[in-house]
Amino acid sequence: MRAFLAGLKLISSRVNWPLFWGLGFFFVVIFTLVRGTYWVSDWLVAHHDAQIKTLKVLGKPHYTNEDDIVAAIKTADLNSFFELDVKAVHKAVKSLPWIATVSVRKQWPDTLQVYVVEHKPVAHWNSDSLLNDDGEVFQASSNKLPQGLPELYGPEGSAEEAWQTFKQFKALLAVNQFTLESLALSERFAWQLWLDNGIRLNLGREDKAKRVQRFIDVYPRMERPEGKVIDVIDLRYDTGLAVSWKEPTEQQEQQNNKSEA
Image 1: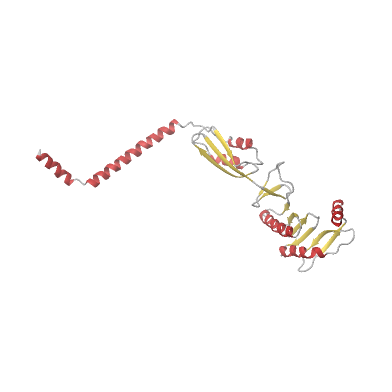
Image 2 (image 1 turned 90 degrees about the vertical axis):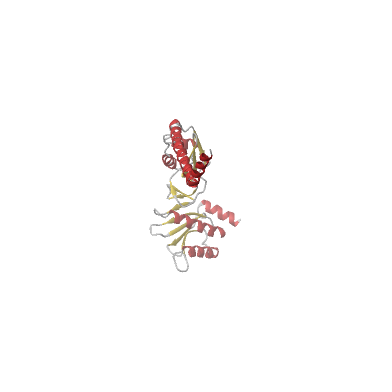
């Protein structure tokens, strides 16, 4: 017995125990990973036919009917949760006229969440399109459009600049009790503004902000011929301006009578 114990003690003293336990731990990890891989594989095979059963449309769309969004989602193959092409769903929903951005997310075990953000219309663009609040052009129609959207016109690619300029001048004019209703940028990049009182301002291509300010400063001191109203104010001069007059419309006559009363 003593010889046996002595032999064990000798063997134990010669074994590199840190290496032994390290190798043991390594083999245990490898075994666990292999077993885990087989388990996942078997689980995927068993659930291969899992279908999308619940569709959730998030974001509270205002202009787009939720049924139209669901119909767009269903153009994709929803028969397999794992094989569902998220990009196809994204593309189908994004193609709807009012949709600006889309986020698609699968939620185990059978749910698809689609979050949508619509364009916010702020102006009409070239009569047949709309602008959103980022100055992006989109084409859509709805009987829910806000009343009194401004009319903006300009060459292709100028929508964002036109919208930023409109906002700038609208704020400047509003401080001085004028209301800007429409703006146009010509092919030669000359600016024109229309006010709610029927006056058109020709600003030209340069120093447009200074020219609007000149109109604001001069307008209160302008003498008006009897029975006439301002049609066009041409501000395309380094100094001064030119005024065209016209016969007032019935609406303008009523406004003048109210102001005089």
